[in-house]
Amino acid sequence: MSVIVVRPATPDRWPDVAALFAGDGPKGCWCQYWRQSSGDYSRGAPGSGELRLHEQVDDGPPAPGLIAYLGDVPVGWCGFGPRSSMERLVRSRTIPQIDEQPVWSIVCFKVEVGYRRRGVTHALLAAAVDHARDRGAPILEAYPIDPEGARLDVAFSYVGFTSVFEAAGFTRVLETDAKSASRPRWLMRLDLRGPDA
Image 1 (cartoon, rainbow, N blue to C red):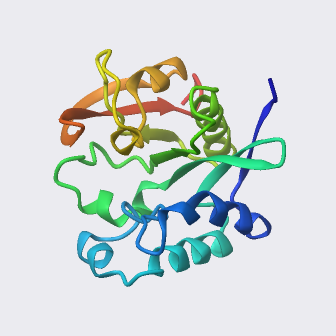
Image 2: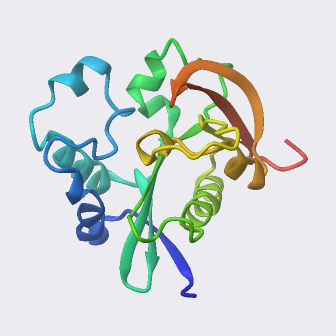
């Protein structure tokens, strides 16, 4: 089995980012749902998501996400960044800000058809932890669902599953009022500051 390699979405890797999102078309999310207010996202013209993500990749660091590769093929994406840069999260009534810590938030995973159930999400999460720690983030936060043994449509599982985060050392902090696939989303955290923090 090929080794999964994860790299930050830097300007030189834009063609790989575009390849991952191209199937979503000009009206697709392009990892913008949490980065904009609800109104701005709804009013976005076709192609605006792609344009905004391209700008975010060009404006980094930090990169707006990570790309997973099998060989030279981009097979997965993890969108994340400082919670303060995620406008919909900043305004969210269902996923609250629970303290004043400058947390980073993991907002989505995207794994290409044909590459699911091969460890891509786990590799992306491990790399996100390292990337956030290396850039001084004190806490990494995520908002996954607990599938409770059920198989869920991929459209609902982009937020990730609690079990994946628990395997990476995250703990459940709060059951939020947000839902995906009619299941509550959990606010989960991983402290990156070490034992002396």
